[in-house]
Image 1 (cartoon, rainbow, N blue to C red):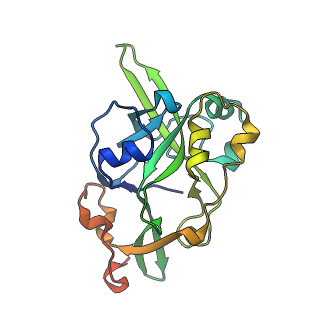
Image 2: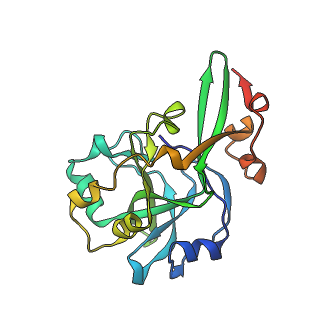
Length: 224
């Protein structure tokens, strides 16, 4: 599962890479995004593509984990299928974090693409209007079985979409579940790497470039 990630690219580059037409949220580079925080998500087809904010973490009755949606577990449930058809989003990401424990020692890693590019995580979102008329949006990351890079740190990994898959995922005219299921697979391990980062990552309030800096393994270790 994915419970921390980063988005370390400037707004102009993000808009160009993901063909975003309109930015409707305050955007800042983020180094240590945690559940319940506001995150930038991409919604809409090519002509109406927007960057909006959403609270990371749904509160649905169909999922045990509100920040991740395990596709294999929730597929087939009516509420999930409804959201899958109509409320898909992309959550841009520069890298996500994992932990590994060996005996009494643990360390954090950052998992990235080898080419250092920002990538598209498949997401789902919900919207509701409160009694005062304010719109509230929340999101979750779709996960699948991990590849061999991620499996050392997580039992699930985000579904990472290539460019064409991203377009299909955001296309509101595509509602065929079988077609969408073709995008649910573990991204190739050969295109990813993991490297040690500071054990201070555990502090959710730590939002500095130091979080993504590569550490020597012995400096990254933390005794339990």
